Length: 382
Ligand code: HEC
Ligand code: HEC
Image 1 (cartoon, rainbow, N blue to C red):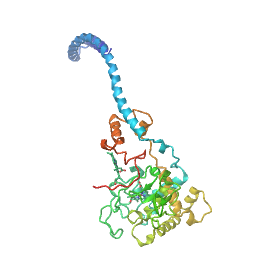
Image 2 (cartoon, rainbow, N blue to C red):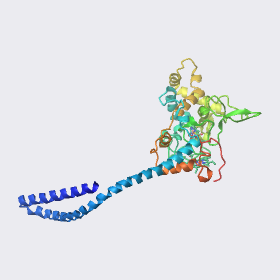
Image 3 (cartoon, protein in one colour):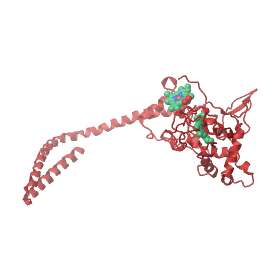
Image 4 (tube, rainbow, N blue to C red):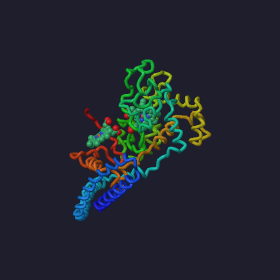
């Protein structure tokens, strides 16, 4: 068919070209243009295409169309990879629905909106120079895009991401050496609602249970550690922290403001204990007119100012906002849901390695579940 079309088109070109050339020569005394028509003569070479007519034999290529069946075999090869990968996923009980079915706050819920404002506010740092978003910017996928973060004492506190650096001022930070002043990388806050056992690189916010005379990690875990005993850095004798709050995210939100390098700073005015620091922040927020926002968000017009702007409510608001940062709409989950074309062939090969057992790659041993983590700590040698 294709061949025919080419022939017909060439013939038409020849016809038009030839005819056109004829007419032009007739009218134009401006024979100059005619010289242009000379080029048309070049088209004569096209006549060589006539030889293509020999391609008529190509019509025999119709048999090639038969080769289409081969293409069918190609698809079979694709299927083999899909079959292998899907078998692995079934075998490992990989199921994103475990995450997508969770009930979580949306960013427009009043409490989450208050949390967002707090998350972006430098009022939670005693030097007015750091916000949660300085290290967990949603525009940088919930991180700061730095190897190590710069918290208090940034040269320009408004800069977030690459370019945020410490100003080296020893009065602001006795540890200042112009480098980053926080010793660990900022993990993303995205999908934080799917951590069910522990938070922080070393899991020091953790759901626990009593095992004879000591607390160990809780099994089975609950969604985001809701309704569990939670151990935190404020815990007494490694027991649960009675003030931890409703879930792991809430428990975590109590600590960045008490870390000297992250948000608290080194000034003595930032309080003695972690509890003192939080109470001072409550006072600051009241002084800065936040009270009515808290009352409206929590629909509470009876508690005292200190109660409604108290840290439990600050932590709850921060937690609800972060728990609304859900990012589950991704091509791999579409593939798992049944769309074979959602990811590329090479991604499928990579996934097959990822989910197969250790000697073949074996990442899933540690990066388990649809959130890709077993939430356990591991010693690594670098
Ligand atoms: C100066 C940078 C910085 C600031 C500011 C900061 N964080 Fe972080 N955040 C970190 C680092 C670093 C870690 C990991 C610390 C660790 O594991 O010891 C972390 C951990 C977390 C985690 C746990 C993530 C996980 O995967 O375990 C959450 C949630 C979080 N921060 C929320 C907040 C909130 C809420 C605020 C504001 C109240 C805040 N952060 C302020 C740097 C920062
Ligand atoms: C023995 C357990 C284990 C195995 C097996 C493993 N990982 Fe990891 N992986 C970890 C731990 C623990 C971390 C966090 C380490 C850290 O940054 O301190 C990590 C971190 C990562 C990160 C960075 C994640 C982030 O949020 O920054 C990626 C990406 C990753 N692993 C991919 C892989 C791949 C791909 C494989 C297989 C080839 C693999 N891992 C095998 C334990 C493992």
